[in-house]
Length: 559
Ligand SMILES: Cc1cc2nc3c(=O)[nH]c(=O)nc-3n(C[C@H](O)[C@H](O)[C@H](O)COP(=O)(O)OP(=O)(O)OC[C@H]3O[C@@H](n4cnc5c(N)ncnc54)[C@H](O)[C@@H]3O)c2cc1C
Image (cartoon, rainbow, N blue to C red; front, side, top):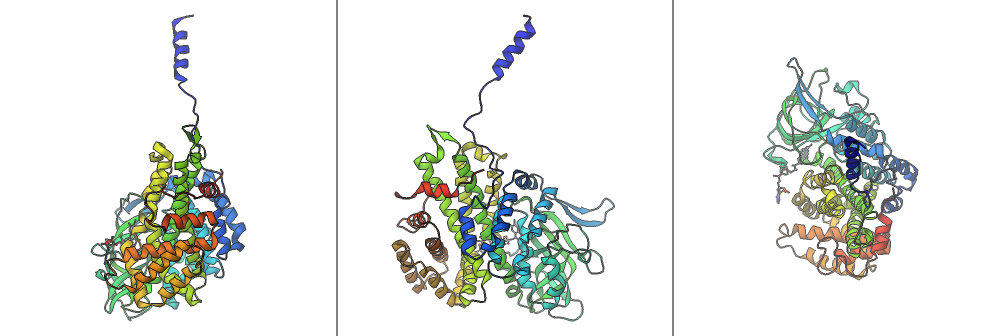
């Protein structure tokens, strides 16, 4: 044997360091509908059983490995802005990775931006929410323009003339990302530009001005001059914008191109450098005499755009509940494979406590979201309409705010690899605070709940009527609701106490929905952990007697 041969053999021997065992595998190629018992139950009970087949097919797509990869790519290669072409002409062009366009195309072709408007009826909002829930688990960022397009319709309808021209193309199931005038497109997307530097929550501080070009009033043309500090998805074909008209803050529809085929001067200054929500381009823009048509009454801009805002808040509930599902599905999957100290992790008593607790959070979030979706399908009923008014604010506040810590705790279930950028958790974690902050941050939602109660006191009766549907099912909930009743009689410092009040209302209504419809093991554990004395602390503090195995079993996706 000569020397080089000895070296080669030794190297091969030394390189064989270990066998890869006891590690997880990707959660792919599973049906994200059929593997989600809570989602299927919610769809059936809230009126969308007719959509089963469609949702099953959609779940197959959204759980497939190839499709899940689109979500990774759309965030790894984020959008880029080109303000000018090489000759110096303004182009205000944002380019996206093809994966982003593929996600947009699927969303639009499946009506995530429009189905309740084009095909209203029992379960329409519920079915759309279910599809959005599954698609958001693949990728959240592209959902921003989808939501804004969906949400624009009720506000746009306040001007029947504009709605007649725009709505058919806004609701069409055609995705056309070309940077060309809307007249050349069959399908359009809509953005929203309210926030300015000096005031986001308080839009009354807006300084953007609207000047009439000729005749004044609803449906008439104006030119807008000012800045907008957050304009997401600036490649949308038109934007709902708030600006100061002579008669006060007013809503406008502003197209990206003028009807004569020239560029409307909505100039994108730069894209935001966001910690999460990377696939979605969010921009700072200037309006330099941009053409726009007045929507709704002059001086009633907030009232006009509020319907759009209510819809986007609902989608924040769907989106954050979906973020929770994505996180807990990963944690459950991992802990069904990985062993430590002689047992698979989901058999370790303390890990069972953590996993079951994470599942309960998601069950509560989904149950409330889908209950509100049914209310949206039945707004002709006064009780349901009042629920929509109250619960889009209450639910947006509570569910979105619960999500970041949920994402973090699910990440910890994976251990060290949970922190790594080649897994799903960094994206889930960085996405998790966004819904809580935009479309009205936490305090704003709580103040909106108070406003609803002051302006429309019937919402209080509607709330108690809704939670009373579960009366007698749990002594813990009955006590909780009794204490809440007393809170409503105490009007002192109500603004200071708003978070405390809304927290307790949110938990009550989540518990009531679960007690009526969820398996006993879920509903009882939810009440025991969230409503009993001491309240909910860290995840993994479920009291004795909870059937963790059953809660975990029903939620664990099988790939
Ligand atoms: C990723 C991203 C994309 C966005 N895209 C868009 C978009 O497309 N279009 C758009 O118009 N906007 C967009 N926004 C802006 C977003 O809606 C605002 O940031 C949000 O409404 C808060 O406004 P602000 O940033 O000015 O904060 P502020 O209004 O200054 O609020 C700061 C804090 O003060 C609290 N606060 C405010 N008033 C009160 C009060 N009276 N009592 C107690 N607390 C109060 C708020 O809850 C918040 O926590 C986007 C934001 C983000 C993060």
